[in-house]
Amino acid sequence: MPPDVPHRIPLRRLVAAGVLLAALPPAACAGPPGQSPAAPPGPPAPPWSTVSRPATAPPTTLPTGLLPTPPATPPVGFPPPGGPAPTPTPDPGLTVAPCADRPTADRVVALLRGKVLPRGVSVRASRGPLCAADWQYTVFAVRGHEELQVVTSGTPAALTLVTAGTDVCSVEVRAVAPPAIRTLACDDGTPARPGA
Image 1: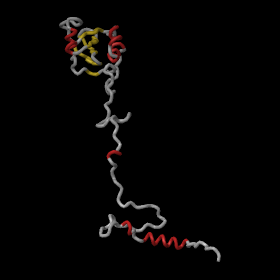
Image 2: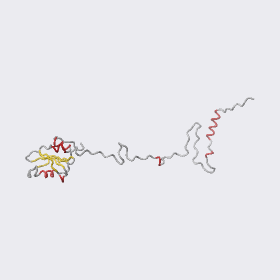
Image 3: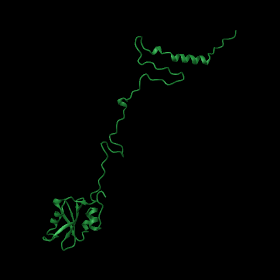
Image 4: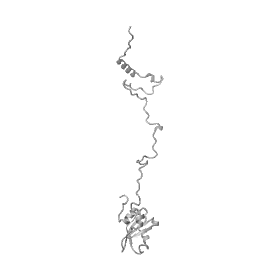
């Protein structure tokens, strides 16, 4: 008698058996008798499907320990939290602006009376006072005389006369005055004004 030849199962039968097994509810996963399963079984997956379906939806939030912590300071180039970064202010010595009564033209005239101006002469400010840092530049129209240019420094309460006359480009102005005052006094020009 010839040795036993292994039996071969046709492929069609294997596929049919797989479809049948897939269509049957998994009884072993139903839980103890008398309890309903956690989730109703969905439609059977086709036999060629390799994607498993989760029994519950995935969590929508990450556990606390896995959340990234925000940096202590914002990265370079980004504004800090709470608003944009303040824009840097220009050097107050590079631009001139009206002094807004700090000092007033009358305060400068009071400084000049008895030193440069005779007590009875009539004057009025034709330009200024203009301020740059803690320096001031003022031009006065003096009745019966040429215009008088005046350079002062300090606060209104402690105003100091630097120079006065028809040419106020003195050594001190050239060496110590803010650039905007030096331009007015020495170059007979008008330096850039704020916002221009």
